[in-house]
Each structure stands twice: as structure tokens, then as C-alpha cells.
Length: 207
Image 1 (cartoon, rainbow, N blue to C red):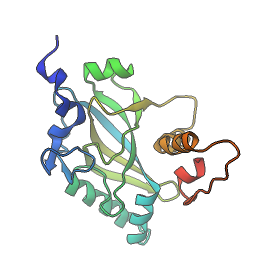
Image 2: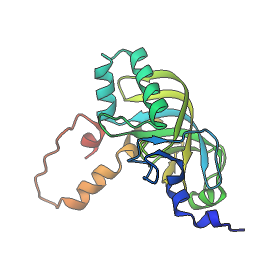
Image 3: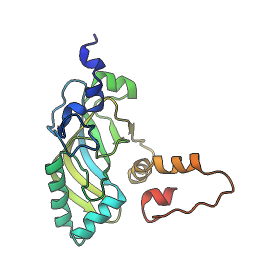
């Protein structure tokens, strides 16, 4: 049975979770409500990994002199202040890996999901309410953070189920920047010379 919530565009986009400034979309907002409880129309994810985008991770690691304890503290502070992993210096986020803990029925039908499925977000961390209990490990070589936490997905947020026959790190790295090579393919034509700036990051390498 449908309710008025099923047609609420504010809930579809997650605007109801925005604390500051009120009425903004979650991505450009400064702060989100990251209460780790799924309200109606929301899906709750048990988060195991954050794959922070290359520019953001490089900036944080540099500011913390590549000290993993300081990096952990820095990330925890960002999430505590903003309710999401949204680097205020670079303005970027990344993606997460986790398992579905509570599933909105409409969202589940749309993406053919079930509780317990392992997923990777195709929505930037800068859009998703995130609550971190603690950080277990920092992987300096691949911009990845092992965590214990929760995230909220809204009905408008795309995601993908992780395949079981490919290395997780490779799949997550590719999905993290899937839009970049697709955009280049749409703009470039056969025979053109294309210069890629910033090929040290995942997006540049895959492009």
C-alpha cells in the first residue's frame, strides 16, 4: 500500500536529512543527520570499507604526514563534524562497501536487493549520511579505510551488488570512478589525441 511518503521528492533525495543549510541537497550541504537508524523510505548499510577518492585521500595523508593514527583521527573528525565523509578541502568523497542491514521495500525491488547483500555505492560519500564507530585500518597504498559504521541510502541513490568472481579491490576502484572514462568516451572521437591530467589517480589511469 502506497503512502504519501512514496511520492515525497524530499525523501527520495535525502533533503530531510540535511541539517545545514536547511533545504539544500545532501551533497553540497555542510552537515547531514547521520543517525544510524533507517527512517521510512531509507535503507541502512553496515559499512566495512571506505574507498576515499584519490585527491581527498592524498590531501588528508599529506596533512597528517602519512601517519595512520592521525589520518584515522582526521577522518573521524570530518564525519563527526559533517555527518558524512566529505573532505572540506577537496570537496570530494569516494564510495563505500557494506552489507544491507535494513532494506526499504521499494528500493529493494528497484535494485533487486536482499538483506545481507554486499554492495558498493555508486553515489559519492559526500551525499550519504555516515556514522563511524571506529576505524580498523588505513591502507595508504590504495586510499582505502577499513571501518565499522553505518550509512543511509535514499531511494535516488544508485549502487551495485559486488560480484563474487572478481577481486573486491579491483571492482571497487573501477566503480568509484566509472563516470570519468564513460564521460571521456562520450566526448572523444576515434583518432583524436587526448591528454589526461592527473593520471596518478584511479580516474586518470582508467581513462
